[in-house]
Amino acid sequence: MELSDADQLSRLIAYVEGLVQSSVSLSDLKKLSGGAIQENWAFDVHVQMGKWAGDYQWVLRQDAASQVAASQGRAEEYKLLKVAKDAGVQVPTPISLCEDNAVLGRPFFLMQRLQGTAAGHVLTKGDAKPKLVRTLAQNLARIHSIGHERQELSFLGEAPSNPALNSVTQYRSYLDAINAEQPAIEFGLAWLQRNAPEPSRVTLCHRDYRTGNLMVDGDNLSGILDWEFSGWGDPMEDVGWICAKCWRFRGQGKEVGGLGSRQNFYQAYEQESGYSIDPNEIKYWEVMAHVRWATIACQQAARHTSGKELSLELALTGYVVPELEYEILQMTKEG
Image 1 (cartoon, rainbow, N blue to C red):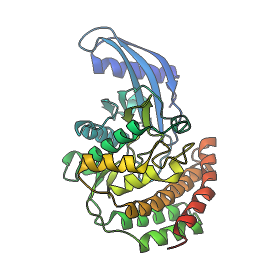
Image 2 (image 1 turned 135 degrees about the horizontal axis):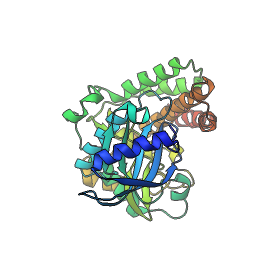
Image 3 (image 1 turned 180 degrees about the vertical axis):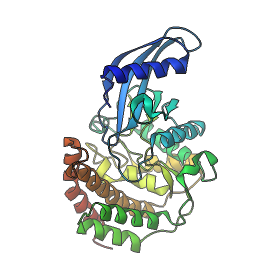
Image 4 (image 1 turned 90 degrees about the vertical axis):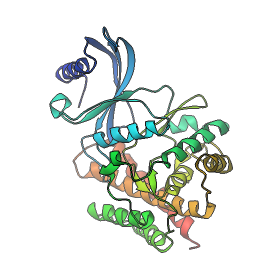
């Protein structure tokens, strides 16, 4: 989709006018970066009359041309945002879901545009951010307060009895689907299968809770982005994901997303959730994080090499795999 196309833009304007029941004007239209799995467009909206009268800053979010296995569709992500918002999680306010392909060719939703930056290389530069780290822990605990009895999230399916073993099976199937021969990743999967913990509880997990998906303004969290991988799982998976070395960017000495200390994060999470964190269990989920990211990177590269979606960004993603494989071997060499 290219919203710069006059026909596409006119259909979007007509949709927004139907939504707000007034004439509108759209301006400052721009495609946002980081859209390997989704396309994101930012624009300003001026509503002339009625209860919506005023100026707004919105983001339009829809699927990219091809998908990654396990990525939720836009209708599902919209519902996840609404449930998270109700649970007190800081997320962009969801505005409207459109599943009519006649408008833009694919389903999309509109949401509030947040202030700040999500760029990992910017956020992890300089000193630790203890206030931000505590806020991130508190928000993650609120996500994990959402249980699998929620009918609005029935599209997520049944909660797995053992999320760790379920993930191992999934990642093996993803590699098989693209005929990837990755011995180091397979070794990591074997280690994960042998050492899989029994979950103490199963909750909603964001499953991509990391620097890069967190909009931050100064030292304040504006909102949590990119819910397309969310599902039922062991909540410690999310903790291991944000603590994994591969998401620290410039802040390698700051173990929580390159932003601050584990102790600060763990304490705030435990206070908000009422559950204790076992550091040994987090080590397991950090191995899982590297295996999972390596698998996704293989999938991303395959989208390019298959010819389905020619993209320099997708092609370059494949170059992170050897570094991830090295970390997998380092973390499992004593096990």
